[in-house]
Amino acid sequence: MSAADNRRSPYAGPSKKLIISIDVGTTFTATSFCLLQPGNVPKFEEILRWPKQATPDAKVPSVLYYDQHGKARAFGAETEDEDTIMVAEENEWVKVEWWKLLLRPAHLPIIKDLVLPPLPPNIQVDQIFSDHLRYIKDQVKAYITSTYGSGGDIWDILSPTMYVILTTPNGWEGSQQNRMRQAAIKAGLVDEEGGRRVKFVTEAEAAVLYAADSGSVNDWLVEDSHLILCDCGGGTVDITGYKINAVKPALKLEESSASRCYLAGAVFVTQAAKAFFKERLSGTEWDDEDMLQKIVYHFDRNAKKKFAEGDAVCYVQLDGHKTVPNLGITRGRLKITGEEMESFFKAPLEQIKEGLEIAFENGGRMADKVILVGGLASSPYMYSKLVAWGKEYGISVSRPDGPTVKAVANGALAWHLDASVGARVAKYHYGTNMMVPFDPEDPEHCEEGRKKDLGLDGGQYVHGLFSSIVKKNEKIRVSEEFSSSFFVDYAADETDFEHTAKIYAYRRLNPPTFLHFQGKKTLVPGYDVICTVKGNLEKCFHATPFRTASGKRFKDIEFSVCLALGETEITARLRWLENNIEVYGPATIAYD
Image (cartoon, rainbow, N blue to C red; front, side, top):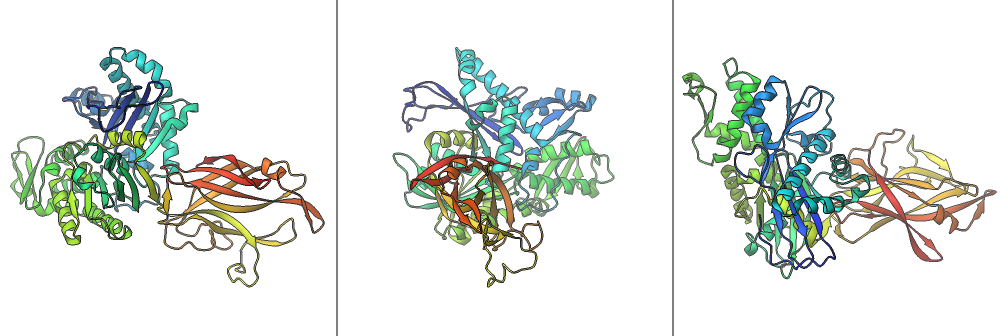
């Protein structure tokens, strides 16, 4: 249990409030909570007792077992318990792991040849997420109930209104957040009406706030300086540049380079090792999937963690005590040379270095330090290689002292309470589609297949142009709103005022004029639909005067789609003028 952080002010709210943060990683999950009590300094507490856990630990495997009927039967540390494994084998339960990566956006750059373990028949990743979150909820409830004197009452009274903070990799977007929110609702963390009490913070942001909160990086936090945070997790590596605007009385940061996400975490080291073991042990008594899994398990917890630059040899435990000299097996232990070990780390290491270089360049080469967190960063080999990279660029590379497994879960609570990050950098171009008056002098307008329509005013309009709302690498203040203006013709007798606008991201350098190839529905590469904004324009219609053209009476309505992108979630609303006063109407965001 953590001590209260006296650097925080006492909670000034009128009543008790419960906040839970859940960091579901590719390989491990950690969760923390904070019971806010009026007049008391907030205190972060980790869940350190999990069913079937041999020794108390803040993290448990993000692993589940499903039975043949599609029911989740074992979770977390239970999946490493020998008795549970025996029951699972006897009943042919299916083990699911690394499933978080199945949620990834299609655009994320990925290390080639990723092979994710298959899911059981008829089980979708959304169900796994929900089952896993329900297990987490049950453990938080059990912990609070047994730890506090009136824990049962605390849970019963506060859980219906609690906030749930879920962490995501930098690259996860609205679609992934929406699926996670639905999983949280299905898991019973919040009800359907309480969906907005599920909040999202990026793992990198939570990690840097934890590092600052822990006091272990105080000497790195210098006002007006720049740093890069690199969170090397199980499946993803998140890299973000920050400028430190203030240290006291409270930490205030802003992004100095757009956050980036790479599928290059620790599981890729494991995957490379597994392929090596499969080839080396082909045709032997260890050439079996169950046996291979056990070998990989031993590798993950021993050789992978200990390997350091300069080590000439490592060993991984096989079953039995057999010696096979020509395969490098001595008394049941497989010899791995230093060069072979280095090859397992090669692809993730190159991806991380490339990501750091991009963050350094895009941040104006201002950063003079890199903070490493996450499980892969604790590898002696990876750390020494990244320190050497830093020396090339004149950047110090450091890791916070103390355990980093709870970094993200506790940092997520700090994010919710402190609002430390005041500005972010747009990762992509964001905008929507529009139509403009046809210009016969514009060669792009005249391309064969471009869709043209006659407006109610008798004019000819061309469809499908990209209207920018936010430009890539533009600085976005948390409270700042960006907008794009639109004109829509409505006939005098119109009765349907529901308006939808698709929001697009362009992920490359300079957005092309048109969203689609001429005459086709195919988006130009680089464009993706990230969400659809829906709103009602009836009030805007009634506030607009009629006009007549080409013998038709209609209204030419002008309105704006307003996006707020400064938080980790996109929010939207519509805006128009009534009597020269700006009026806002609500809008909803839908995801495919």
